[in-house]
Image (cartoon, rainbow, N blue to C red):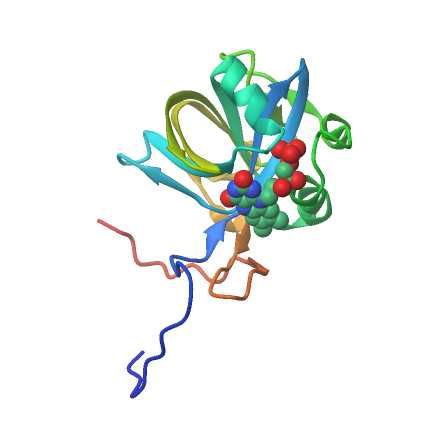
Length: 182
Ligand SMILES: Cc1cc2nc3c(=O)[nH]c(=O)nc-3n(C[C@H](O)[C@H](O)[C@H](O)COP(=O)(O)O)c2cc1C
């Protein structure tokens, strides 16, 4: 889009980003929080996300060196919102979902989420009040009905997207452009 005028606005505009629920086992109980700032790298072998050190979920990530990433569909918006606004210190978020475990045994995953992954902590980067958690993807799980000939169809996943740039609201996915990336 060509525009005659540009304005400088505050913040990181690499957006929208998919909302993820990151899960860990804290005091033997599954706990989940919403993460907006996440990114895969090294062609998806690893994922980075930004975690405030005060988060309750962080305790389990550090103790077990494992965590899960769960992609909620739009129909899970209310439960997702609870995970993003209430701390496991104050409420038991394990009751919100049906939990399953994979190979790692200590990365609680959410049955109701169409896409889930279990990860091992590969690195932790100290950023003062925050840390960058880098996880290696060990296994990825998808609901069969979200596959088309073995390929993930994001329209069926119907993820929740989150916009920065001052908006900080949720969006749903738009149209598929049908132009395959080589
Ligand atoms: C849209 C949205 C995005 C968020 N992104 C992050 C994030 O990137 N990093 C983070 O530490 N907290 C983030 N949060 C806040 C946590 O999800 C929230 O504080 C949660 O209640 C912490 O739960 P816990 O204390 O049980 O771990 C986000 C919340 C929302 C609603």
